[in-house]
Image (cartoon, rainbow, N blue to C red; front, side, top):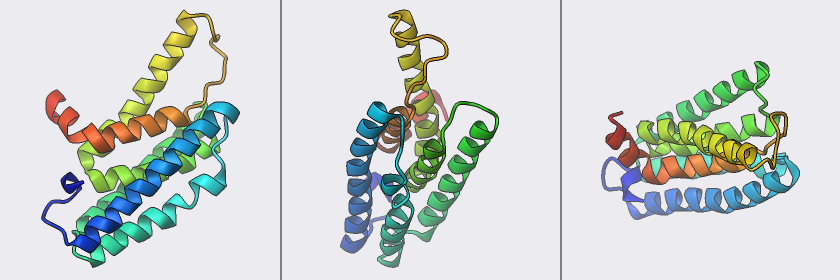
Length: 173
């Protein structure tokens, strides 16, 4: 958790950030299960992510975390939301829930750092692509079979949050 800060934060800031990521972890598990079963990411689960993460991370800044981290989180959320919106508009198979979830995940990834954002955004596509290849290879799906992408977005995001810095260093980002 300390890797999410550029300098030693106060205890209130640590608790606020820990609560933000704990909340995201619980929601991630629920959303992955829901999307895998129904191919839907319900607004009731996704949309609270914006005020919950934004509010808790703002509290962390008020308690001594760097404001630049909150700005990076906002930029990360906006960039990932816009990217998924463009994919949806281009007919890339993204649903509206994927677009909304991308913004929430972009906030969490952005707070963790630019490396986390890059790795987390890319990893979701890698995991989803590998799953698709496995489905095709085992003949459990065809080229037109719909596959829930939310679980892979979430797994990619957590990969970026937890391992983003190490992966970026390893590949030279």
